Amino acid sequence: QVQLVESGGGLVQAGGSLRLVCESSTKIMNWVRMRWYRQAPGDQRVLVAGISVSGRPIYLDSVKGRFTISRDSAKNALYLQMNSLKPEDTGVYYCNVQRSALPSDYWGQGTQVTVSS
Image 1 (cartoon, rainbow, N blue to C red):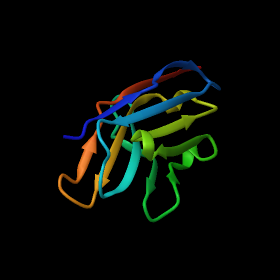
Image 2: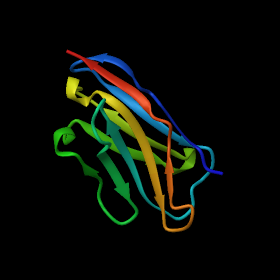
Image 3: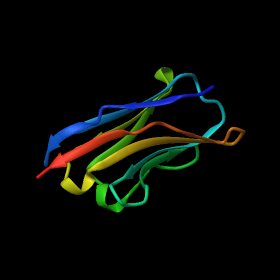
Image 4: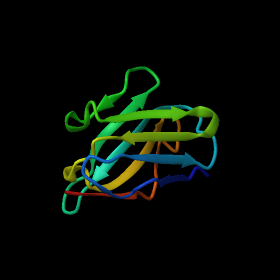
């Protein structure tokens, strides 16, 4: 059973940085996409950044140039480096892995990021 655990969130002032980490309990076979989502209070969950086996990373327009998604297959980990943070980056960040086999979708429990102005 795959479990995803996020960490690295916290309270930071605007302009600061955080690195989010999503660790898998085991190596995930047949993955096709790994993504970070954000959900602010009262809002829908939005895609912030993603990588796939077949393409370049994608980013939400508002985070381009500030956030970087990466992975370390040896550590079964997905990262989100967040620089020049803004108050509008505040929310719970979730990692998501999609596979080409069943089960096809895994989610972590989320980590809170709060950016103060």
